[in-house]
Length: 434
Ligand SMILES: Cc1ncc(COP(=O)(O)O)c(C=O)c1O
Image 1 (cartoon, protein in one colour):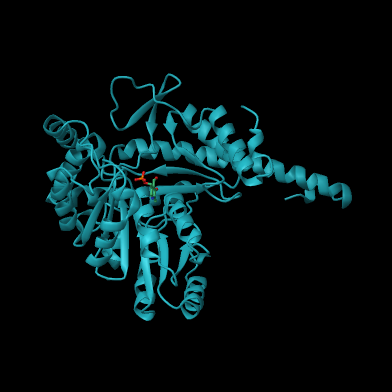
Image 2: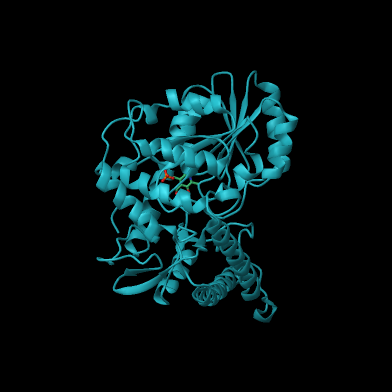
């Protein structure tokens, strides 16, 4: 572990961020480079000489190692080279149009391609939220959304943070902000939250969009896209896609098995505005040929009957994992239908202990700590995907249950120590301790 750089003096939050990130790196739990030098099978990874089952992949349908996607990428590179070096604002390869049309078929919306979801947010949000508008953002919205909203804030547009998962408070806030805003109010949220795997309250959003004519919604559905809904268009488009006051951004680097971002909306005018004036998309480089080729192959799978089968299998797997966690007594932050599961453990040290123990047992899971989650909400995160056999997944859950139990027992020891300390002030017989 290294010392905190002096440039961070006076910035308490960033110092804490640095200290924790440095500790995770020091314990070998983050910023790792795989030791699989020749080949990645999509299911296991090698770290510190040990082969581990990888429970952190967001390629939920297992498409990242699909031969058809690899061939699509290779074919595109053979035909068009490694990079068509021009901003798409000037000119783009024909696959740009072909892929855009494929996404229009998948989503039933107007769409726009971006090299990443983050760039899509940076292009879209500062254009969609105009002076005299206001924004209400869910407190757990992804960091990429929050970064784009910094640009909105710096344009003098008010950005209010709504508490996560509380529709009563959200309605009160929307009601108040709509009343005090002269123009539009944008509600910004994730479709599937990337840490706790819970869903935005989409039915409720439909209700309030009907109720408040000035309310608009911008949803980041990076983790919802591709594995559920018609052709995999995701829960946000499935629930709100026909609404012309809704814009959905989704990512291709998760379940879709490639990389990149897409903006989709039933409102062609809004998509057009972002295409013509979205800074990072006009002044930056294109999606590279390899990604366009792999994405075309993935889009064709999404538009085929095969996708229906893959989606059905994954959903059955998620339900089975929820059931098994209940059976084993593993507490989940959410049982919403999503391929991300989060076990709250409440402290960074306990999270480290569990992730390390899982690694010793041959399982690679993620730890989540500040600032990814608020302090006190640390947890262990794992994903459910078709790359991993269900039987191996269940073996992993058995080990996780053991370590969650073992560390909660050591928490009790801490509680007893705490009680003992208190006892000095209020003497009690040890037998009276819980
Ligand atoms: C919810 C969410 N949005 C956006 C992103 C960023 O995606 P990209 O890498 O395509 O910019 C991520 C990445 O992890 C994410 O989880």
